[in-house]
Every structure is written in structure tokens, then in C-alpha cells.
Image 1 (tube, rainbow, N blue to C red):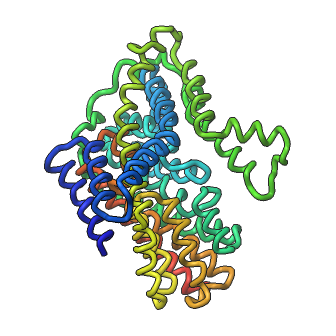
Image 2: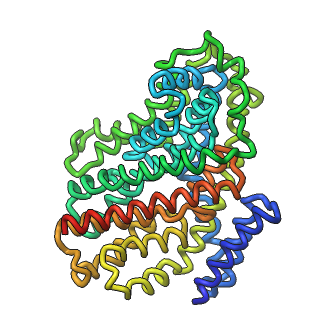
Length: 447
């Protein structure tokens, strides 16, 4: 009970500190991380410090260079006019009123093999350009993209979380993909609907989409749409190939070719290749563009704040994980066997909300649920696959202050923390609950 109380107080502190006291999120998160670690009584002071350092360093080590590289690609797309060329091309095909739908679909496809954090970093510049071109709220496009990415990230292999859960629960991966695609499409529709009906009504404090495009964007001397899409799609293609090569069937074999694909498909390597591709977007590249005062320097400065905040979110999440909060939450809910197909969703949602990581919530919940499948009447092949998808749905609920993805979305879109709670947090709640209801309805038909 003490852990639960400390967790609630920590989350309330972050909310109040960032919205009322106007503290910088990195400071609020660090105070909360240390405050929770010291007050929960489950770790020594040395372990609290180690958890903060490990969480901060681990998170930045995983996504820091990716954010930097994505920021560089974004700046070159914007400054060269490439982003506007893409916007103009896509708007011609989908129509100005359908930009959120386009971003939802793009996000849905990209996040099947790519972590949603990386996907959002890559595609956010495109969402900004499309919003500016169509004169619509950036909130609608950004949240449509964010929720589109989340739909497949949590429920459709080869994303690592669903694959891990399928392995732990001994579920057939083909059935998991089948049910995952079905449920995630419904969740995608819910996310898109939330974006156009709720997020579209919100004008972000720092939204510049109402302004006229810059001269660099509207210049006809900029790169073509085809050339502009290469820095975005090339990293995604490389990452997809790595995921395909890592499948159990080993389509690329186990030799040197597979090793090369795996190397170039690492997000860090793939994004750096995207950066070099972005260098060809300007009509003429110069060393000034690559200097500390040029386009690269501007990208590094804009990425720095996001990286720091994201790292602090990881530190807070690591302290929560190391305190044992996951075992407490999962153990208490694990007694409610009568909840059947809803139980995996509830446990995953509680773990996700408590410690921030969707992947950790998925893997932990799978371990808790595995010995309960027989008692829940969920040990048939189809039932096991549905349990995996139910866990994935729960791992969406909700993305808030202790989730690094929350800070990636709010940071790149320059949302205030209050706007992030209103859009990202509520949006993931809606999407996850719709997915859970869909799983339940499917279970009534197939089980």
C-alpha cells in the first residue's frame, strides 16, 4: 500500500509541478524520481541513485542519437523545402481535410517494425509540414500520428513486446498477427476519430501552422517529393529489413548477409544513413550548414531539451520498476480470476500507468498471466493469441509523465505538459479501451 500511495503522490507532484508551479519537466521528474525512491522504503539510498543513473543513461543511450539524427533530418527537410514538397504531394492525393487520416495510416504501417518513439521522430516533421500546408491544427495531425504508431507498436508483431508475450504465453504467432491486425485497425479508427473530433479543437500554444509557409518551403527550387522522401523512408526500410531478418524463419539466413542487414537496420545506424541522405536535399551543400551555427547546430539545440526530458522520464520509470511496484500491482490484481479476458488488459494497464514502459508492461503481464490461463479458461490456441492482444491493448493505457514516448511527442510538437495530458494521455486511454472492448467482442465470437 505504501508503494501505491507514494506512486500516486509522485504522479500528482509531477502534474502540479509542471502545470501549476511551471517547473521544467526535467526538474519535476528528477525530484519525483528521488522522492519516490527515498520514501517508498524498498531501496537503499545507493540503489535509488543507481536507478536514476541507469534509467537516465539507458533511455538516452537507446534513443538519444535517434532523436538527434531525426532532428537533423527534420531541419534539412524544412530548410531545403523538402518537407513542403512532400506536403504538397500528399495533400494533392488525400485532400486537405484528410491529413489526420493520412498520418494515422502512415504511423500504423511504420510502427509495425519500428519503435513508436523512432517512428514519431522520423515522421513528426512531415506532420508539421502537412498541417501548415492544409492550415489545420498541428494537434490533430500529431495525435493522429502518435496514436497510429501506438496501435501497431503494442499489438502487432514483429514489434518486440507482442513477440515476447507470444513466446511467454506459447501463443501461435500467426494467430497473434491476425487478431492483432484486426483489433489494431479498430483502435486506429478510434485514435483517428479522437484526433479529428477532440485534438482538432485544440490550438497548441506554440502551433505555427496558422502562419504562412516560409520562403524556403514554398520555393520551387527545392528538392522533389521523391528525393525528399528518401531520408524518411530509407531508415524505415533498413529497420524493417532488420526485423524481417530476425524472424524465426531466418529469411536472410545466418551468414554475413544477415549480419550486414542487422547492422544497417539498427535504428541508430539507419537514422544516421538518413541524415547523410538529407545532406543531398539542399540545392548546394556547404560546410556552414554542417557547423554549430548552421542547420546541424540548430537541430542539435532543438533536440537537446527533448533528450534531457526523455532521459529524466526514463529515470523516473526505472526507479518505479526497481521499487517492485510492478509485482505489487500485478499480484493484487492477479487474484481476480473471474475477470477472464479482461484481466490481462487490467494488469497491463495498471503496470503501464505505474511504470511508463509499454514493453515492460507487456512482458511483465505475460509472466503474471501465464500460470493463470488454465484457471481463466484461456489455454486454447485462439485464446492465448487473444490474451497477447489484450495485454497489448492494456499497455497503451495510459501514456503520461513517466513514459518517455509522452515526452517525445510533447517535446517535438512543443506541447505544454497540460496539453500533453489532454491530448496524448486521454487519446491513449480512448484507443486502449476501444481495443480492449474489441478483444472482448472477438472473444465472444471465437472462444
